[in-house]
Length: 296
Image (cartoon, rainbow, N blue to C red; front, side, top):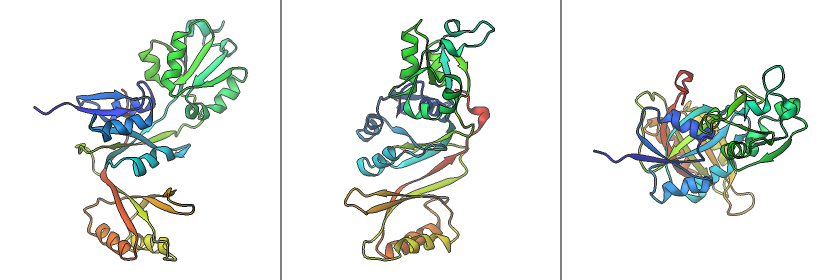
């Protein structure tokens, strides 16, 4: 009988927690919650967990640069899967404490709104329109903010967080979906030295890191041409500093092809022939989001 697998992730009841429960639905996996993203990475890098779950990109905020840099500079953990999950934030509190005379919640009874700074920023239009008088306070996670509401009854406090956090802490969703954009999705990566496959996975991607030679004008153009004339689709390309010297960058590229593709192998050979360094970050299943399976 194989040992139970484990996965490190950001705090319980956050969007990361919802996303992980969605990915591993129906599987017997141990969740190891960590306060900081560094602890998430190191848990797996040190062999304490099989995988780490990393939020890497968001519809509204773009790339999570800190997480990308950890993946590139601090650890050597292959990407094993990717999936997208909706980042849905809600206004959470005690309905009995904050209810209005005509039903619903009374915005004037809310004195403070708390959340993670990213979640707060994604709900600013809602806050400005409905709670301009409320004090705003940020915490290291949305679940921590919801917990503060739980532990401080009678003070008119509310939090912005997940429906999962409200359920876990026995609080009420005062208003659902308070994010300013309905298409707020986060892309997650599963990284680790343990392989992972899903039976329903039909599409695979490959992520690479390319470092250009310093004395080769037009190298980036030639790199892109190696993919273009082979009709290899690049779904993402982003530059990040190598941290070696000013003006030195590497290029993170997501490719809509599996690593085993003959065309991709030939493209890498052409790129390396001009002196570029190619580092494979992973070739992995890209799992589709199915809304009917999103309940956690």
